[in-house]
Each structure stands twice: as C-alpha cells, then as structure tokens.
Image 1 (spheres, rainbow, N blue to C red):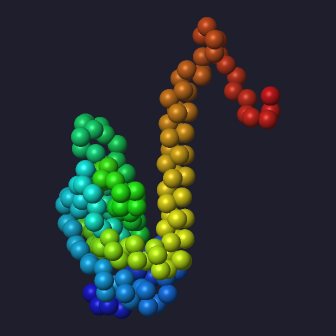
Image 2: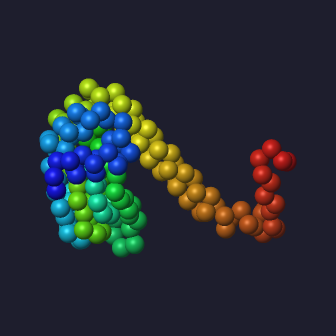
Amino acid sequence: MTLESDIGCLKSIPLFQSLPPPRLKLLALMGERLRFSAGSVISREGLKPQEVFCVLEGQVEISNPQAGEGHESLSLSTGSMLGDVPLLCGRVSAGRVTAKTDVVVLRLPRELFFELLDSVPEFAMALTRDLACRLYRLAGAVLQREVAARAPQDEAGPAGTPSAVTPRGQA
C-alpha cells in the first residue's frame, strides 16, 4: 500500500480521527504494517509487550489457552487496539492474540505510542475514552453474568415458593 492509503486507513479508525495530518503521516511512516494469515499467533500471553497493534483489517481473537477446554475468548475487529493495556500498566499480556481471519495490523513501537500520548492531547483523550468504553462493556458483561447466575435461584423464593421481582423504585 502507499503512504496515502495508509493515512486514509488510519483516518477511518476512531482512535486516530482526532490526530492532525502531520501526526497521521508520522504514524503511517513510523508504524510497521504487518500481515497475518488466519490462525497465526500475533502475540502470546505472559510476555511484556514492546508495542501496540492497531487492527487495520480483519478479526482477531484474544484467549487464554491455559484456561482449558471451553474457555472464553474475546473477538475484536478493524479499529481495535491490542497490547495498549498491559503496556500502559507495565504488565504482561493476559491473553494470546490469534488472527481469526487474514489480518493487517499497524505495529506501533512502545516509544512512538508513548510519544503520541505525551505530545498529542487529542490522542491521549481518544485513548482514554476508548479504555473507558472497554471498561464499561466489561463491567456490563460481568454484571449480566452475575444476574444470569442468580436467575435460577431467584425464580424460586424462600422454601421453593416463587418470588416476585419488583423493579427498583416500584416497591
């Protein structure tokens, strides 16, 4: 791809839309475009990341193979960032990232990622919003699981009698 098409691709990703054109150009020049075929491992769990990846095309899956059969995974697609959380926290990656389809990513070295955060307030704010949204979705999923896990218990009230569920504020 050409530099112009790389910049166009980056502009279409919400996280980068607020970047001024010179920063987009720098990102396209400094980032490394990598291709992974379906089934390829992009990054492994337990390693300290030295970069972040932005998914430009395709779908990836984050999983923890050590969890055994039937383990849950998370699917992400175009526009998703990978490795930003453990890099920001100084932690190892919690999951393995595998290409579900043929994938194109932009690899941003650690130094470039932190330079963007330090020097481009719009990028820092966009990443903050993205992280907040991911946290909100995670909290919602955890709460839904808790409700689902309690549902069989809540259907039968004390001593096996049915219980009435009253919405909050309507008791």
